[in-house]
Length: 342
Image 1 (cartoon, rainbow, N blue to C red):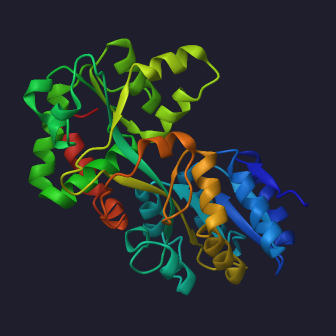
Image 2 (cartoon, one colour; image 1 turned 180 degrees about the vertical axis):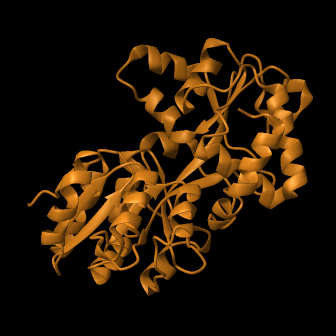
């Protein structure tokens, strides 16, 4: 099987444009990807095997890729942009990166909450923003919702990332959707008041903060926890085993979910191949690769998840359309600034 060509910025800034221009054809699709998971290679291989269409991949940061496509203009070889988080997909949408897509396959396969209302982009994997707690100090009954993180009884007990983090911006964007801007600001202020320390580090660091006793509660995406549980490093596994995961708001709207998603680029040289690629990402085969590769949840019902996620059982998820997370992003950023969430 022909291996997809893969380039990473900044080298790609010099080489990829010319390379992609010569490879754009009826037998190719050019994917600009801000997902940096080795498992995605299996997606590209499987698509090529199923369709005969070669996948050429340019990897970079989401903002880098957006700026690159804008610089390339009508000459851009990009067919598809693939990234994570609805906030980043929204930024690309606002910069005119995506074109609307009508696909019966995507409409049938993907839940309405995972589809942009105008078909500009689609969610293909789900990541849950979960709460982690120390069962020695906190009972699951005490922390049933995101709203509880702002309760004064948890003063000095919460570890969470900075306001610059897109995952937190999208979480706050969901709070705006459910509680309005004033209610969301009250919640954000409450979380700031309850922080065990100034925000620092990534999602893994928040979970490890609970394991070390630095805090009793933390917020992180679920798959960071799975990575610790399944790590080759014994210390990581031991740390994870001291922490419990909780999916909030099960008596209400359900746990906040975000997406890994993609859209077809404006002026794509291979638009039909691009749509076929997106449709393939909604297939059971591709959904299973998403589920096993990065421990993400599939968006299509009935697709088998990996063993750790399966052990957690079913839980309720917020069915808010993920495009709202992007639309509310500017408000979320302003709220973070006002409450001093650094």
